[in-house]
Length: 347
Ligand code: SF4
Image (cartoon, rainbow, N blue to C red):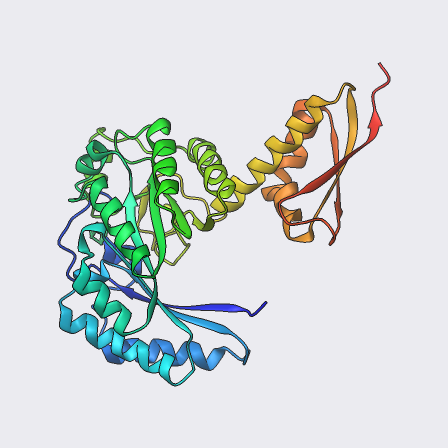
């Protein structure tokens, strides 16, 4: 399989008509200034210089703000630049992210003209009350409408959803995942809400109106959501915000994160938690008191089976007095496992 590379170009808050309660795009994107064609070109050229693999699949991704809410001229300028790299064969595709209420026929026509392949929509929740409470400025019916138009016009559809928004419950978040499945996205990103500096959420947090999820709570709900998408073969391209100089431990002096379920390996916590649950459930079905279990998995899964800092190994020992032995087997499909009981307690 060809190796995939993404050249991320952050478009901070440019033209976004909204002010979502949790968002300070400038700190999330790690950039204080607006992007220009010249800056974008430099970013692309710098990335391309470092990609030595001649067979690579390279994508330019305009992330961060609400791309299609930018004035049309600016969109054209950035898309035209990205399209030139497709035309000269240096890049294979373009991806943008935007708001569901910033999609219409004219916008899609422009994106098509410049060969944009993937459109990701910031959905966040399927519950209109929660969307309003977070000042999203759109409803779930905008999401449905935009998602259909994107798919019908031949683009790849992506969705982004959040867990832990103000007044959102686990049930709301599971319902959001189920509602998104019906809209047939090809890929999803799941973001636990972090309280970021200079946002309205920070004010609410400081005056006690908002309490963020703990890491354990966020991991638990993300495990359920990941399962819903994985069961439908929807590609889960991110779980947790990407670590940057500014999205990092709240006690780091450059961090923009004030509170919330930040963890540098959040996705691993979710995936290894799912492995733990699956191993425990298999052991519980056996009619013996297990002392040692050998779990064979594809090498890609081995870190998640062991868990972050060997968490799963320790938890199995502490909770069930079971020793976990890991075996790597290339012949086992990713996500699958073979479990063998190697020792049992006699009594
Ligand atoms: S729509 Fe996106 S960019 Fe605009 S304020 Fe909300 S999260 Fe930030």
